[in-house]
Length: 262
Image 1: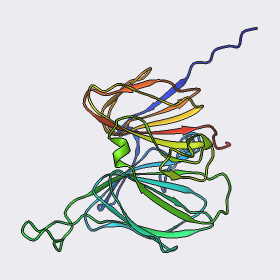
Image 2 (image 1 turned 90 degrees about the vertical axis):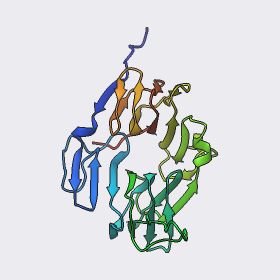
Image 3 (image 1 turned 180 degrees about the vertical axis):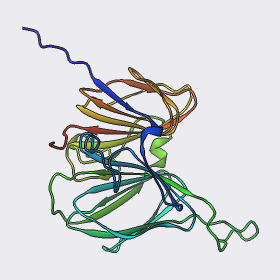
């Protein structure tokens, strides 16, 4: 008896089809249902529930607000973001630095644009913000509710220079010694690749659920074709596809070996 072959399923989501929030100081695009934007058919893929593409204007940001029972990973593409939380953690997140906050039993935090204009003569911070901050914030459900809140960050810019697919955040034992930061979900890992024109293609992990997001630039994915900035592919049923670029691209890949029931 030969088992039937089931080909992978590609669900391509284009950048312009995302939910949008424009608050003046915030330009946010949501890959999944978020806040007032709700579609019961678009609540998650695998264990990934939020993939927000946010731009915050200079000197503004998210005031102190609560989270609970969620693993939150923030990845900055441009500018810098100040994090402060009720556990006493604080830090500045910038491109190439991975950050994870475990909300657990409950945590309060704020996120503000920390981009300052530098005085051309003294090199010191001037008295005004000038640059927007652009970042991707992603939420995955933890293995269990009610864990202790936590925070972790680590710079991995050097590893990204090689151009390959770099494990950034993981709770999977397979990446225990390779990922920069840990998340409390043993079925999920986040990878990032900064692809350069002409480099060898990257190969996607083999997993029952993948979320491939083009954070910057343009890429081509085997079985799909061209993906522009902001496009995403929700892949079910196996990976192994190759991704290349002719122009340069930054790709975020969630590898997931479980999904949320319902």
